[in-house]
Length: 111
Length: 136
Image (cartoon, rainbow over all chains, first blue to last red; front, side):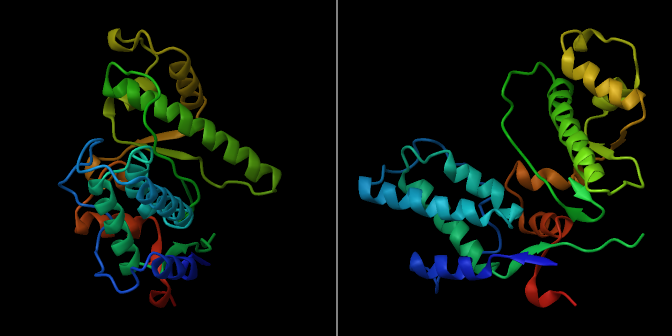
């Protein structure tokens, strides 16, 4: 049995207008570290958008434990997102584009 | 947590309290994992599923494995009380088996750090995350 959220992921990609973005093979950079005050603060309407998008990403982690860590990292800054955090969110979305068909597989184990 | 080869539960969180050593940190997380394991075993039992093998706990901290199996108290573990006894009780009653896994083979790494592409692919493989087209 394969659990996927492919349709949700595709709808999400088109909702944020990133259906044609460049796909990325991993969900986050393994060298850069996010901190609270990297980059410039987002304006309040952009912050709202950040929160709504991160919320949608959180829903996708339901069948995608590989995204859980990256999403958790960007969640830490929901209260005051900056441009650097936004870049990290976009990276996750680009990874989602790369891996939208991926799902959790359950196999019956032979006795 | 795996049931057979399938992932059924996962969790990664910041420690709620300060630990003085990695073994102490490991103890706390293992106590939580064991609690979850016991719950799951009970749930499966209620559903009429009997586990054929003993639940196995993989741990990448050797200090913890020694401590869990050995009844002696150690200077650096004097203050770890409830979790300590909880874990040790299950292990000495042979309800749970603790095994060592090297950091290199640690499956759960992807929940706690950003990985390189190769490691990330391995991580996904271990969790049975596959693409729709690649099955059958």
